[in-house]
Image 1 (cartoon, rainbow, N blue to C red):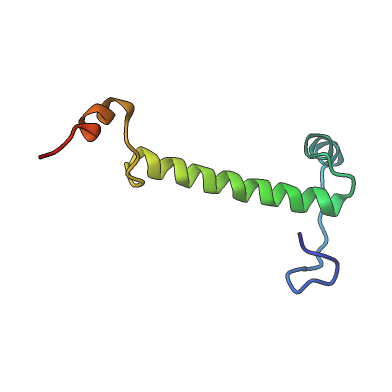
Image 2 (image 1 turned 90 degrees about the vertical axis):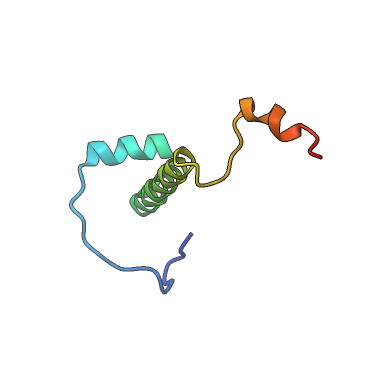
Length: 78
């Protein structure tokens, strides 16, 4: 997590829906606006990564073996 004054920080002005902010704080377990926005951004990026990984799995890009293929793979080859 970036600390105050970190090179990755950028000061900005936001107009936020306070009801949505409070709901997000409750869901995320955060107290401050800064903490809530940063946690929400990390969560969005995490979910995007999971969607990419799921798409890769669906395309068979990870070489994951299906359970029905295990007997054939375990068969002794001569």
